[in-house]
Amino acid sequence: MSDTVLEHLLVRSYLHELSAACVTLPAAQARELREQITAHLDEALPPDATDAEVRAELTRLGRPRSLAAEVAGPGWQPIARRLRNWLGHVRWWVWAALAILVAALGTWAGFLDSMNSAAPLHVSGTGWLYPVDQQRAIDTTAAGANQTTVPVRSGQRQGITLAVWNNSDWTQEILGTDPLWYYAEFTDVQVDVESGPHLNQVGEPYNSARFLSPGVIPPHSYRFVRVTWTSNICLVGNGTETWFGDIPLQVRVGVITRTEDVRLAGENFALAGPSSGRCS
Image (cartoon, rainbow, N blue to C red; front, side, top):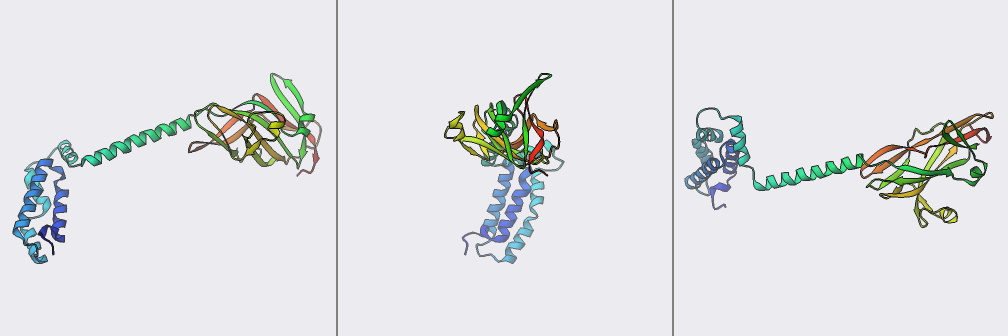
């Protein structure tokens, strides 16, 4: 059995409703009214009061909203005053939690803006990946544009190597190419990023380096990146070719994934016919 009637379910519900009705009163007035009603109920009812006795006493007191309106007095309170009174009931820890939440949201928004505005990847050097293509490459310059051309090896793997710079303050993870990049001409496109043990070297150490897909490039660093594919295009005659001068890479910066259209250091890569090998 409870030592006070204030623990009775009907009394607790009534006092809760009274607190809700007092939110538009000044905090001091609301506190005084609640204390008066609480003291009255504690004196008027014994700890073992029945539900009927409690209900009868609460009926004599009147509805909580009527009590709050009586204390507020006649007339309509301006919205600004009612809002000020309501804010006066908010606990200090609620303000502290709101301040922390606002600060966290502001920090997160700043991070998102920094990710979105991070400098895109930049290519500073390029070349054909496979020795068979390196040996047969023909470099030409026309109208200020450079192009390197190799015979298309239809049905076989071909690819290029890139020296890629990350000039941003964020680690950028290369996930692959845009799915629509040369979707008809190239199949099984793979993008691998150098991860060691011999970083940023050429020759034999480079050939034994480890490459990962997806792979990361740390801030203000560069890595060798290999883009390979199976040439799925049929070029039926001499002088026919397909070429590209940029690669749309899918890149994750922090929690944001975006497509960066990476220019290939001002050089075009071309595959020239006629096709050798299997093609479709």
